[in-house]
Image 1 (cartoon, helix red, strand yellow):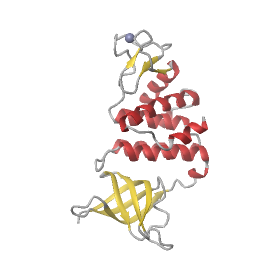
Image 2: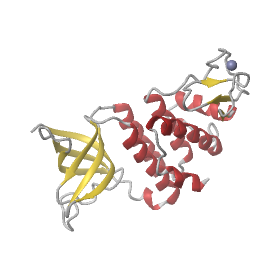
Image 3: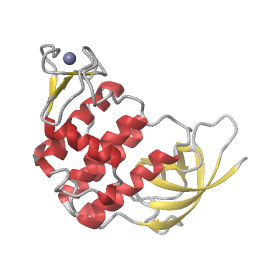
Image 4: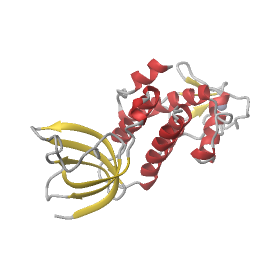
Length: 248
Ligand SMILES: [Zn+2]
């Protein structure tokens, strides 16, 4: 039974049987993994509050031969996000983070970039109680890391370079961005502001970005477009998105 010790972020948990929990988590060493935490639903259990959603933990788990589920043996809390879930807007954003990560990342494929992206974004939302900019940063980078982000600097059809005042147009399935002359019916608009916001986000670290650079409204538009792309890739609607739309 190979033993793993890794930093991990809890994505979702589900009751399993009488006393256990099924835990989906993102580990730094092995990517997205599902495992069983035995006895985690008993009143007194060794996991305490470490299995709350988005908890950043140090985890020890075992892989069992021919079993898809690992066995979670120990969890030690590094950082809890429980306090951020008490703020409604933050909790909706955090729900998007965990659902997108859970849905988009493949099983058992380590990605340090996705791990850091999730952790950084969650920490920023917790610290600032502002979710628009972190959420647009997260969704844009998720699309970029997934390899689904079209070039944002020029029209994919005619090759014209976008200027600062230009809006761009795209359909989630086209995976390419078109200019106003080449747009097709039914394409969505990426406003000039959202386009320049996207460029800022791709060029700057999250903690260096401000709401002057990417205003909340622009960030929301950008998030919307990126979540469309993600939903197209996964072939379904994100559950948490309905909550996000109710905030707008
Ligand atoms: Zn064009």
